[in-house]
Amino acid sequence: MAEGFLTTHVLDTARGLPAAGLRITLDRIGGTARERLAEVVTNHDGRTDGPILPRERFAAGIYELTFHAGDYLRGIGAALTEPAFLDEIPIRFGMEAGHYHVPLLLSPFGYSTYRGS
Image 1 (cartoon, rainbow, N blue to C red):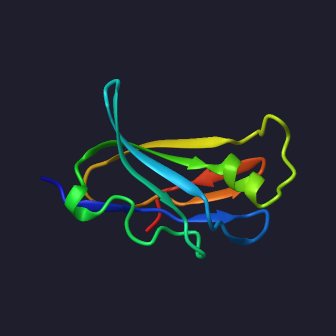
Image 2: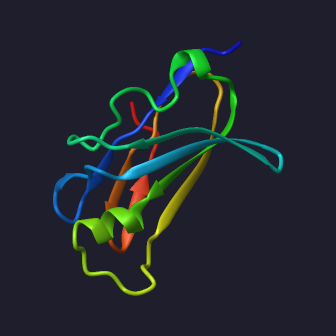
């Protein structure tokens, strides 16, 4: 069995601040099946209080983090189009072993992500 874990961090690049209070879900994807593994909210630092997928629950495979950006942006009073350009941001990626850090840099009209350290 592979060993690893997953963390994330969300920065609000439009405001230059951590994105506190942003809801994130994590699913494991297997073919057409989807298993919800976690639902968390970012803390004052834009991070989760612990790994979103801890070592004891880690397995190699395909995962999807969904960042509920629309709810967050509405909550901070961002001027959005209706419907919002960005609402839910799904990021699908594979993990085999090790520490995976998948941060999100967010603004009302764009985002970027990468495998961090």
